[in-house]
Length: 149
Image (cartoon, rainbow, N blue to C red):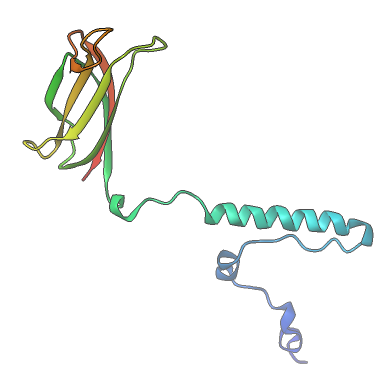
């Protein structure tokens, strides 16, 4: 007697790699009144696949990078804020004043002196009549995140 799997190749069991290479789709229900449901399920799976293809990808420039974050109270400026990173390529900072409105502006740049640090500056308007920025004279809580290697 011959092997039934050789006579009917469609009965062969797919390998586990086959399952990994292609997404699973439910089969057709088969009754004419269920055709609309089949179409809805197919559409749902197609949309899921398209979402999977559009997930956020790490830009090539940031692959292999690490992040560090923290909070710091600043009056005016602080230079050489240590991050624990070997080099800092980018840094983002924001003033944390809770729900209260404020007129502070913060700027942060990777340090030109220390490779694993950044410089932080907090500015405020000179007065209510003069919007020229000057260094902040009161302590301000600043939260930051830096990334690099």
